Image 1: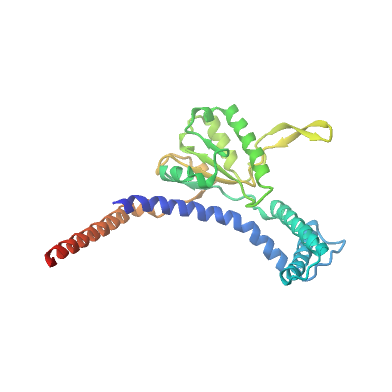
Image 2 (image 1 turned 90 degrees about the vertical axis):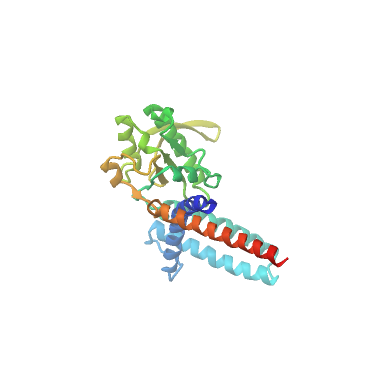
Length: 286
């Protein structure tokens, strides 16, 4: 019966991975589409900031292609190799800035996965969620002040990580069905609301400006993070208002688990039968 128990986890894992890959691919695809629509890379004073940036990216890419051809042919001078390196760095920097500013969609609904199976799969090391998980099954996260401190920490972590590929940051809202406080339920509605999570509060941060230490005000903005919520039960008691704000990801295995379990178990029994029969026939032949 091993297959019957192993298969659900793999299906859940692949479902989650597929959704996260979409979050990663979409901004890159938007950039590629924008660049394809540019016929002339010459920058005009009337061009928008976005179009100017796209034209610069396209110009640097064309230069990179020329330098790369010479390097591949063994004809590049040391100066051209250095210019290739500079172009590569600038292209990466400009693309990262474009994706962060124009590529990541706001106002999308967070994903909602039902059941403990999803909790187990998201706990895998592959997802690296140690510093971006809020587990509402943990009593300390059922305190409003501690929750706001956690939101601040995650905001800092997300801003830091999104400067580099894959350009998305995953926040896991675990066991949302275990929230009992009406105050926290109200706060959760803000966190998952695409129209409100752009501003979940302010805090001060000390930053160095030369020799000076400056205190700046920062806003907790979850609008550019990929939010994934899970429940401890496959049939949780969630308000209709909360459900409406989420993108429900109930996978087919919840419905057809028994069929898959019986089929996989049946295949193992049949396999075992034929192996046993083959061994008996070998003994008879001897």
